[in-house]
Length: 268
Image (cartoon, rainbow, N blue to C red; front, side, top):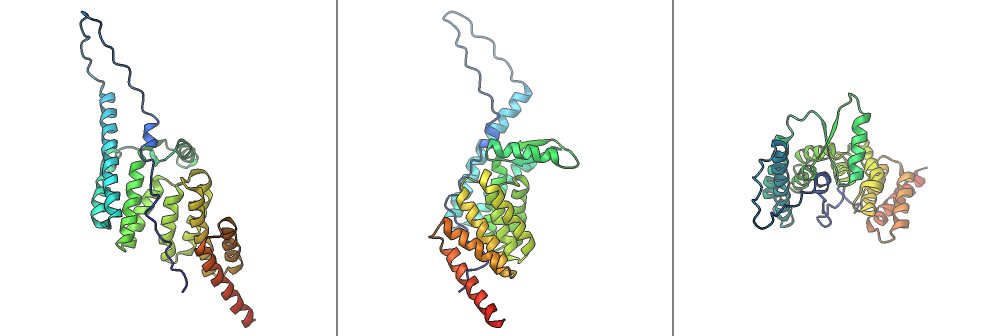
């Protein structure tokens, strides 16, 4: 039997460095000054409003990391509907925080990814400033989309994954999962474009380059085979097997492509 349209969505390895984007800019707290014996302690200084706001947001970010972790645990225990409530709490927190922010907002899991988004924003029209926001926000949209796929609500899953993509447009994991949705809809042009973007960005921004590139190549080759480009599909599956001879999916699909080419040869 031909492999199905959906790639297998694995729960293992879904570890996101959700704190890294905002932790980069945290300043080291100054050392505490301990008065000498007999010396009066200095009078407490009221924190500046900006400092208080920053501290509150950092505490909130930590809380949201815990909330998203609880949601992921529910997903792993087979309770995607209950998990969505946790992801929605994270999403709502950041929607409220940034609702009046006029900048382009991006989540990045590494300094390189954040810098790439800053450059992307500078190249877009109309020109707007860019602002790096906690990666937890994009991860919440992704995990919500993942949960909705489990619940077979593909329209809602697509909307959530597209929002994750908008916040992290170079994240190959988000792109691959979104491309899976487009593929299920047989929206071949958009699925192909999205898989190709995932392949391109996996070299620089993937936490697991080989895995994300493999998923993208599988998707690209599948679309080629479905749209009659059997030679192109064959070449990609052979490329996958050259990199990983144990790639059972690529071998299965290559066998299918070979059969289709043989049938075409008989007709002609």
